[in-house]
Amino acid sequence: MVFLASVMVGEEDRKSLCNLLKYALTFGGALVIVKTGLFALLAQPAALLFGAKGDEIDIAKNCIYAYALCMPFNLIPVAFFKLYQCVNRVFFTNAMYVLTCIVFPIASMGLVMKPFGVYGVWSCYTSSEVLTIFVLFVVCWIKSKHIPLRIRDFLWLEDSFETKEEHQIMETITTKEEAQALQARLERHFLTC
Image (cartoon, rainbow, N blue to C red; front, side, top):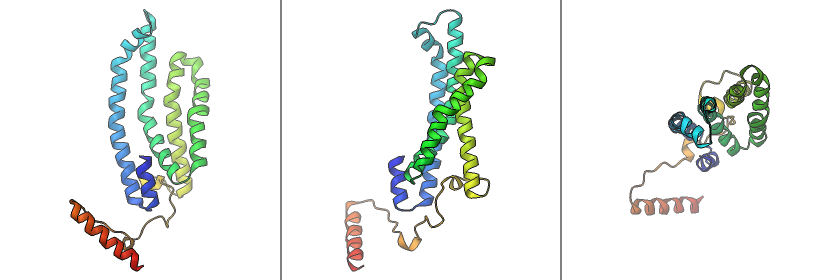
């Protein structure tokens, strides 16, 4: 995703960036569903593999389930943080990673460990991801000065970030000859500029 996003940022192609994020979230969502399902199916064998016995098996299974719940929520920040790195929002991305990976989990553990015990510890990953999404939403709301409802509202791109249609060349190439003809046309065009 980072490679494609970098190309689209270089071309200042806002529409393609939005489409890339839609595809990443859609296909990533499908993969997350499969991964979460595998965690659910393999929770007991994993507990047994690591030597759990008796009540430990149920505790381990429930902890694995609690951890697996964070995966769908993790997809959204990861996709947007990859994009933010490409558009040079490095400080914001690093700050959010610190919040997501250190501050939010530790704060969540501190709040829920006593009442929920080990399950609270494992659920801190989910609460951390939910808090990250909330902070991302609020920051984009403040930045865009309206409630962000579309992917483009979360992109943080300048208004001038868009290549004008007259500066774009859209071609469909299916053969080697078509590619060579396009290359020759482009060479003639840029040699006359």
